[in-house]
Length: 89
Length: 285
Image 1 (tube, rainbow over the protein chains, first blue to last red):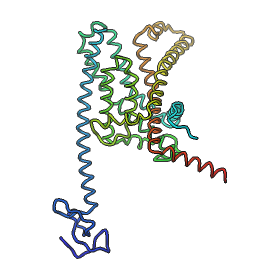
Image 2: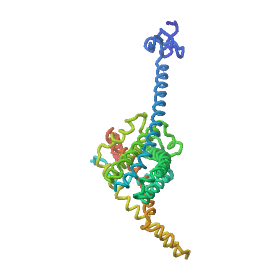
Image 3: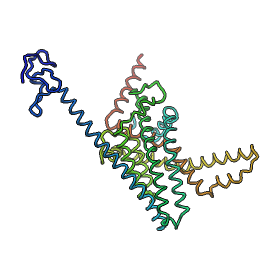
Image 4: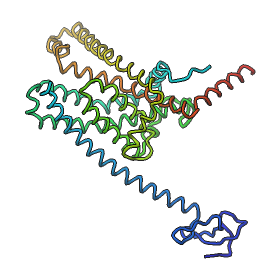
C-alpha cells in the first residue's frame, strides 16, 4: 500500500505505506510489516503494552488463587502439626 | 576513606530515626493491621498448651482457630507491604528523590499506591514463608533464619514488579550480598525481643502499682492475671513485644536492602563523590 503523502514522523521523507491502526502515512523506516500489514512504531508499542498488561493481569489472578490455596493448606498444616507435636513431645 | 560494607549500627540508627520521625503514622498502621494476627496466634498457642496431650482429639477445634489466624494474616501482610513502601518512599525523600526532602512524613496517596501485582506477589511469597515457619518453626533454630527471610520479603515487597512463582521468592535472597550485616541485624533483634518483653512486663507492673496506690481498689484478680505465672499473659506479652519491634525490624531491613543495592549499583560512590564535591565547594567559597 503506497500513498503520495509524506511520512507523519519524518515530513521530509515520502510515505510508502499507511499504518493499519492509526491510518497515518509512514515512511519505509517507520513501517513494520506484521501479519502482512504495515504498522507504525507507536501503534506497535501500544499493542505490545496491551499484550504485556493482559499477561500480567492473568498471572496476577492465577498467583492470587494459588496464594489462597496455599494459605488454606497452611491453615490445616498448622492445626495438624500442632496436634501431632503435642503428642510427640 | 569511606568504610566499605553495611555497618549494622548505622542501619539501626537510620531505622530508629525513620520510625520516630518520618513514618510513625505508618508504624501505627502496621501495628493495627498486625494486632489481630498476633493476638490470634497467641490465642492458638495458649489453647494448644492448655489442651496438651488431648490436642489430637481436638483437631477440628484447632483447625477452626487456625482459620481465624489465616484470615488475620491477610490484613497483616497488606500492612507490612504498605509500611515497607512508606519506608522506601521516606528514604527516597531523604536522598532527594520522589518525595520532597524538606517534607516530614510520607503522603498517604503515595504510600497506599501499591500496584495489585506487587501486593499479590508479596502475598504469595509471604504465604510461602508462613508455610515454612509453620512447618519448621517448632525446631526454634530455624526461626531466626525464617524471620529474616520473612522480613526481607516485606522489605523488598515494593520492588516486586512481575508476578511469578519463583521470582518473588528469590528477590530477597539476591539482596543478601553481603550476608553478615543481615545476620547482625537479626541477632540484634533476637536479643531485643526479651528486653522489650521485660519492659512491657515492667510497664504493666508500674500500672498496677499506680492503680493500687491511687484508687484503693481490690486488684487481686489483676495481680493474678498480670503475673508471670499466667501462661496466657506471658504469651500475650511475647506477641506484644513482636508487635512493638516489627516496625523497627522492617525499617532496618529496608535500610539495609537500600544500602546493599546502592553498593551493587555504585550509587553510594556517586553520593559520596557528590558529598566531597559539595564540601570542597563550601571550603573554597
